[in-house]
Amino acid sequence: MVDNKFFVIDAHCHIYPDKIAKKAAGATDNFYHVHGFGDGTVGMLRREGEKAGIDKFIVQSVATTPKQVSSINSFIAKTAEQSEGKMFGLGTLHPESEDLERDVEEIVSLGLHGVKLHPDIQGFKIDDYRCLKIYELCEKAHLPILMHTGDSRYDNSNPNRLIPVLEIYTDLIIIGAHFGGWSLWEEASKKLSGIKNLYVDCSSTFAWIKDNETVKEMIERYGTDRVLFGTDYPMWSPKTELDRFMSLGCSDEVNRQILSQNAEKVFGV
Ligand SMILES: [Zn+2]
Image (cartoon, rainbow, N blue to C red; front, side):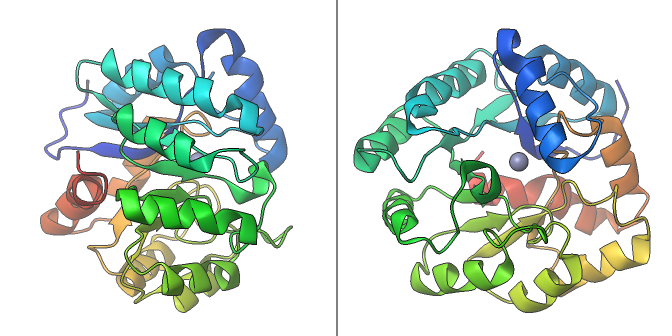
């Protein structure tokens, strides 16, 4: 266990039931052409996270069909319940579900802290009319959405599709993963900064942006009260990601904001 003087929340980690973890993690690796770090199990996240000095984890999983929604939400909730207060869960929704109202009610009754959506993997565009119900229901239920954002290979989750949603659902909090636009970092941080219901996380960015100054510029653009730390486990090693974040050399105050306070505020943990 690292003696890190900061309290650290990993606001972006994926977990899967043990018997399918390897396969599920492998599917994501293939989608992004990376060789992922972990096996996607809860046990490994806990071990590797604690070794890195991470105190709490916001865990999530994404349904690729409507049929999976309920069982994934139960798995996430049960994992959080059995974690002795270490893990907090986000639910999953699917735009093609027959009963989104029921799904959102279930997420609320399970005590989950928000919703994770992944347009590129779930196969929808952020501003798709089928998603409007999701935004409306989450806004009403005060469930923040951690949204995968950005992929220059497709046009599902890019900044231009996110902006109108943020403008229409002004009480809906969206956390744009990967600094608001994976593979579109500069464009995203220029277009999306200053939107009051948007936060971003720093996950799955450090492997591509090696230069600390560029990362610090993005943090400045969004504001230090707008950025959450996240590892995107199992894709990356929690320790490598946290070490890289610490190497930015932010002030203690900024470290406290990004490593825990912003996540506490957004997810109510
Ligand atoms: Zn993710």
